[in-house]
Image 1 (spheres, rainbow, N blue to C red):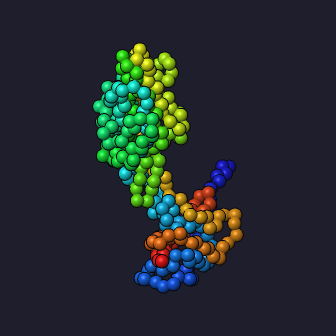
Image 2: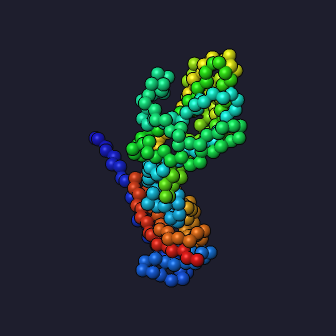
Image 3: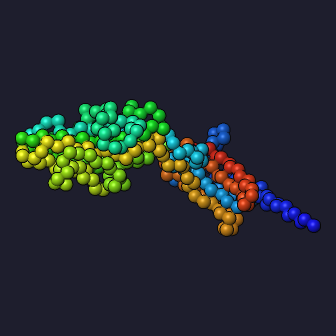
Length: 295
């Protein structure tokens, strides 16, 4: 006799949850109007295992919950100081997209774009900020990978310059996202350095969480060419939008109301997302409210 067992899938119960708004001041079509400072009060009926709220503010937009890539403006900024000597043209800011590798031969021989002229650089020990430098034109799409490099040159025969870079960042900025692709605090261990002078150690670029520094030598020091290159910068990278709040989860009791207060005037798409699930099945849905906050 052969006994065969069959597997029965466990079906999730369809959520019955619903939401209504009870305290809007007026309506314009399908838009609910509130005054700034009002608390939006939602009545919750029915049931779902899990309920989240997306308020529609930046970072909490339901429509962007699965968005992982978008190209806004690429804004580069940093500050510099320069000390000692009189040598000219000792510091360059370079950029390239889709560099095939970070070995020294590839880096040195690559077709870099010189963007030094876009920046405002120090002429003394007084720190000078570049301001916001738009480098979006250096890439073609959100799928590109950008590299930035700082190239130092010092020649023997006179005192060489010393440069310090601080407050460095590259940020992908859109109308509803602001993602830091690179900065000193996060990237101290990810810079790649090349140079022909390695003694003393200060004669090459050094990276910390607060500065990039290269110390020029005295007049008798060897001619020095030194590079420091960023990690690969995936220019379209952003953070997925997340819920503003968890209204209910599987282990919490059923809820009958929810409140939210908007901090600024504007029009928002407020979304409740809900689902019930088992190991075999999920049933989900969402409900939107268009909300206008006025003065």
